[in-house]
Length: 298
Ligand SMILES: [Mg+2]
Ligand SMILES: [Zn+2]
Image (cartoon, rainbow, N blue to C red; front, side, top):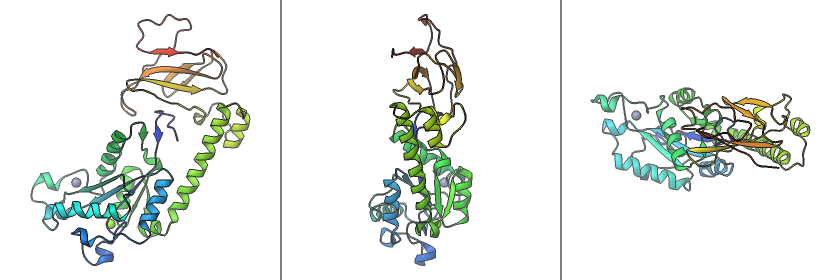
């Protein structure tokens, strides 16, 4: 699904707690996972994770490992156990993160942090790291889910704006059905929009197919930003006429020809920064502008 705000692809992320969610932990193993030989991923979890991968989700592990700072857990063993966890899931994870802090640590540096759940730091840092690795993707929390077995997992989900799913219910496949349904709806929406773009479906038919009624719903605006620095927005306009104006995402657009027009503008960051607000000149007199209007003759 393309973000109507940034033009980037919005990808759902499955954030999962590790111990007693993905692999057996203290509650199910009777001891903490302190060594790779302790790792036992729950039966069925590797297949379940890969079903999400096949639906287009990215998967991030989010784990509190404060035992490192308290001296109960060797950091190299923790790392090796995480790798073993990844191996037992057939490398389903896009990222695994763990916080080494603990409030009982004897130095403020290791006692105070923004990453230990229920704080949301690991969720945010993971999303930023994924975005750096996969240009063109963003991970808005309204699409994401956090799976865990403890109150701090649920609180972390709330703090990060993510839906929460209990680990036992998740392993039983209850949320997967929701994910499948969401993917089917999205495929339908993409098909309808493409049909309009290719002229095989009218705007009215598309509105009906998508259950929409307003004149210019934002879902009809398919923005694609290409290049870096100077970006191009492609805005199909289905209901407007030439010279009509409309404001979208803080920018004033003017329809320059019937089906779409393109505007280049500076966009330093998806959520922070500014986009130059301007009205493209009707004639060609645009020298000195820091933006450029691209038009094509139909
Ligand atoms: Mg847990
Ligand atoms: Zn931390």
